[in-house]
Image (cartoon, rainbow, N blue to C red):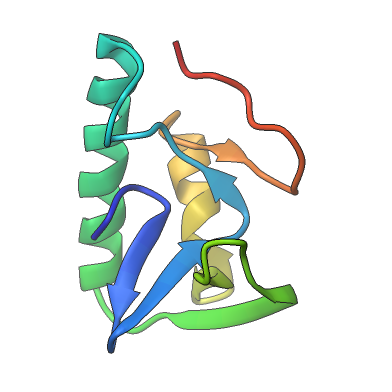
Amino acid sequence: MVDGDTFWMAGTKIRIADIDTPETHPPRCAREARLGKAATLKMQAMLNAGPFTLTPIKRDVDRYGRKLRIVERGGVSLGAVLVRHGLARHYGGGKRSPWC
């Protein structure tokens, strides 16, 4: 895991395309650090819980070269699960809101 919305899989860096999670390196405040760590741990647990699918979106990669994918299990976005837990926000492009 890199953080709550980015992970490595088979040597490829994947950016979960439908969410934005708090930054972990470096966080901008104590609240962001706390939420970022919780988001990372929750997503890691969900990814390790069993098979999931990676669904491409219109753009294949972001400006950092990460593959942009929706991560789903049983038709449910794992990103949406993080949103329901208050550990992520829906992301559809554009400027991200601060967590502090």
